[in-house]
Length: 92
Image (cartoon, rainbow, N blue to C red; front, side, top):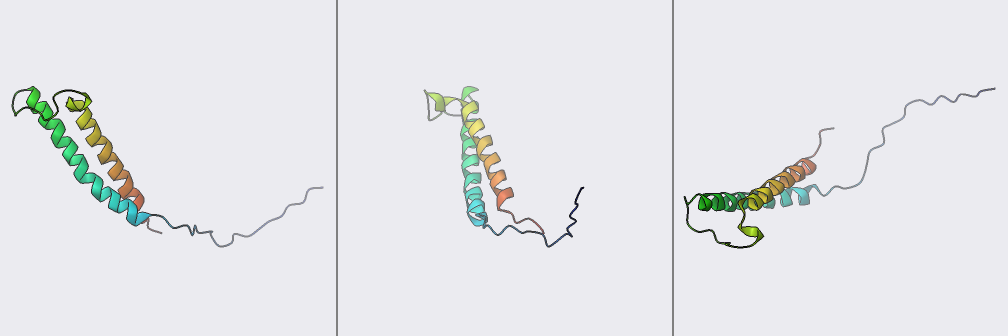
């Protein structure tokens, strides 16, 4: 013998947890200028390598490569985009 229980659809369960939307938006707003500074340093180093600009501030070490600075700029920009997406309230 098989017993089947049929339940009607009740109210949808809503998540009551608070999200740190304001904190995410504030962090994203701070990351954008830092990413622009990293891009500026990367392009400065690239221009210094082509002798279009003055000598770069970091002559030796890992910070003296333009690939590092542009990579950091991309990473910070992607982080800002993700934080903006997280901080923006979803329409319900």
